[in-house]
Structure formats: C-alpha cells, structure tokens
Length: 296
Image (cartoon, rainbow, N blue to C red; front, side, top):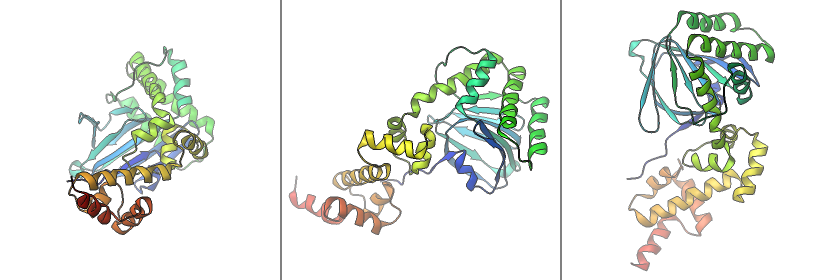
C-alpha cells in the first residue's frame, strides 16, 4: 500500500508560523528565537537551512536522525544541529512544558567564529553535538531573553551576541571539539547545490522559497539556476515527477487512484485526475484500463 509523503518544515523560516515561537534577535548574521510548547509535538520532521543551536530552558526533547538514532536533550543542555540534515523532533508534555532558545547562525558568522577559535579547514560532515548543562550557560540564555526580548537592536549587536555565545561555549565546552563541529557544519555547503537540494528533497512538498533557503540562494537566483539545470521551473519539474511516479504506480500496483494521488502529493483526487489527463491525454482510470486491455 502506498502512503502519503511525510510533512517536512524548513527552519528557521517555518517557525514564524508557530504561535509558540517569537523572535528575539535577528539580522543577516543569524537569529535567536524563543519557543514554548504546552502540548505534544510528535514526529515533526524538520531541516535547518543554517547551523542551529538549540538550548532547553525547561523540559526534554528527543531528536531522531534518518537512521532512527535518538539524541535526547534535557533542560539546561544544548545541542548543535548542522544545516541540511533531516531530523524528527518528538516532545511529550507529560513532564511539563518545553521552553527553548533556538539560535541560527549564518555561514559567514560561523566562519568568523572559527577564525577566532583558531580552527583548521572545514572537515568531515558534522553530526549532532551536545553540550552539558552549566549554570553560566543557563544565565546567559535566560539573560538574553530577559534583556533583549522586547528591544529593537542593530545587526552589529546581534553579531556580537552570537559570537559571545560561541566563545562562551568554547570556554565551557571542549574548544577544539566545538571548532570541529562548526567547521563540519560548513562542510554541508556541498549539499547546498541546486541539483542536490532539488533531488534530496524531491519527495517532500517544499515551496520554492524553502528550497532556495536550503541552497543558500535567493528565490530568483535559485529559479534561474534550477531552470538552467532541469529545463523547467521548480513547480513544473515537481509536477512532472509526481505524475511520472503516479504513472508508474498505476502500471505496477493495484492501489486505488485516490491513494496514488495522495502518495505523490495530491490532496485532491479531482485535481490529480485533471493534472494526469493534461499530461498524458487520459484519466488515471482510462490509463489503467488501456494497460489491462493491452495485456501482458
């Protein structure tokens, strides 16, 4: 039986739609956001377009990677998440609400921090890195939220606060290990080509703006490069892929037309049938009937 494709969100931009999240500091250098959850948030799949640092003020959160490996973060602990890595977050409110600070670092700021840390060249791809609880780290995080929560500040101050956080982590944690983790997060840059992003996330219903963010490009630049590579706009390419997948499922499975439409990303069966007919000159039912009539 075919299944509907999973829902994937791209952070930090997708967080703007969550009422539980507010932005405290933001500039071209990065963002610092505060989130509070009072209800279960189960099996939320996400990917970050930038290096993400998540610090838990309260609660407990689990992160699962593509292999199903679980990394659990408790209150007071911090986790560094590299860009372009798909993860699944699982939060259960049975132990109380979840409160977290989420910091997103632009690549240029990470390079600035690495120059200060004395890091070598970018290394292997980074995995998830956790930092143990510390009273000083807790004081810094809660202080940022309290002091800057309702202030409008300029880009230079945002940059300084983000650099301050990284340098504080270097003092509290293993400096060289932190540097290697940040350098490794930049190694995902080769995962930011237009072709890689398009193919890596082709089974997720992402907007062009999401794909552009994951590639580190503006939407117009992403669209130009995409058309040069694939000979079609992102929307046209996705539709062609979906309908091609649907055609294969009609040929090789007995799944109902409704299920096939859902599996390839169409919530509306009538829209799926209409698009299929435009592409292939017959409805899915007519196409399947023609295959049956042709015989083995």
